[in-house]
Length: 357
Ligand code: ASP
Image (tube, rainbow, N blue to C red; front, side, top):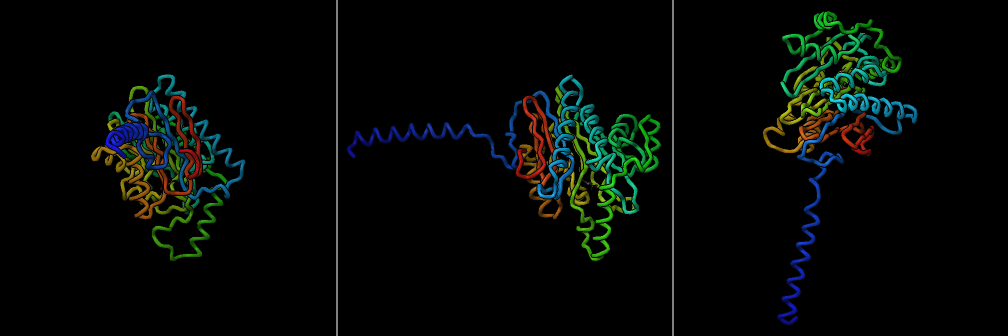
């Protein structure tokens, strides 16, 4: 190659290089948690995400009819929440009403359809947090309030406390005019069957290790996180806890920082999974803390907490989250999680791991 050819060749290579780097620099940040929602830093109008529990949810164990029922319930829940946000309602109202609906659907382990305790009744837990004020409310071990999430919100709004439990919580909820029901209202045959199966397993294997005292690895807790048009983030979680729970056991769902957290400066989070791990690893708060202290985006924070820290510890489950820009994360380390989200122009409902996130 003579000198002038060499000159033209090097100029050409230079332009090719510029062209290629121009193309690749348009790529969005890596999709670490497997979600399709790229990290953006422009606030969007609103966003709402829900879960109906994570766990060993596999296509082969599900009939087409059951599959359709779950999807339709998740879709209806999204519509309830989105309509509130679209009409200028608050994230707090959207979260409460969306969860109220999920509490009424027997498919989920919250309100009607809650799992059974070892002595064959229901004890419900819920929590609610406002990311604008960092105010929060929670109830634990309640037996006769139809909508535990409304009781949790009432504790936040109308009491000077964060968490009320048992009979005191029930008395407070009744004084606030919330609907009461008999404990048998929460009964469903399929949860009763699940209890009998778990009891049989427990009998068979009395030497179950501490981390496997709950062999039923299907968590049906419900949760919702919303960002409203005013820029406020609210998170809520409601559950019957874990099948065969004993001794007044309370899980992560009513614990602020474990099962639920919201802070307008970062994100809102609602969790589902083996509560003992979520309590010990302060999972919901940990997602916020990663974002606040290390300035990483939401999907990276949820990935670290759910797919690294929890997996190393042996804790199964997942979470949903929304950041202040309206980015969504639906991150889980189980084969599936009932989940969905809605934001302007976009709606997703999924169950299994290989589906859109
Ligand atoms: N996290 C809940 C608990 O441990 C269970 C669930 O998510 O279904 O009580």
